[in-house]
Figure 1: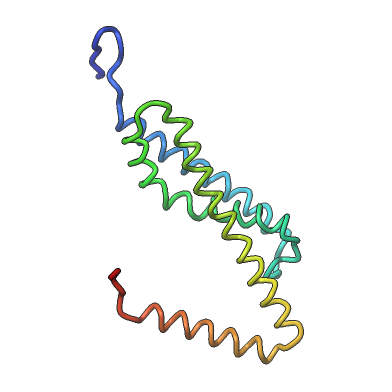
Figure 2 (figure 1 turned 60 degrees about the vertical axis):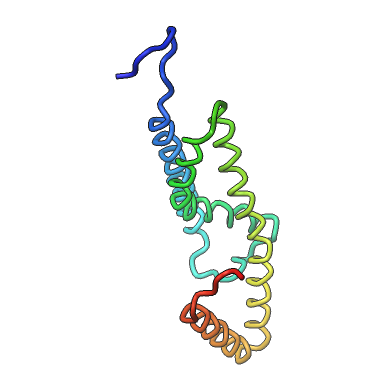
Length: 150
């Protein structure tokens, strides 16, 4: 039950927070639906999936929206709680900026996927060695001691 002060309802940051998180989760659900529809046509494809950069980046961004929007929902909810006024526009800006960064990350991802496909097509043995080295490097990094900023 909201109380009134001079005829205006008291702001409800908890409600805005829940709505912001819910909207991001709904957007993620829509992105998952789109990803599933696109994935049906790409069975068995790897790398760049035969797509040009101009098509790969939007597909990449859709996939990132599906996977990453749920993980940013708690932070976005906290942001919504702290933003005074124009929350809808600011939340839309936060989501758009977040997805723009993921879209930008799709450009080097495309380059690496293209390079991996090129190496695999021309030098299958080298591609195997490269894959083993990359996985080993990731394992060493993951098992190394955490580093702190100096």
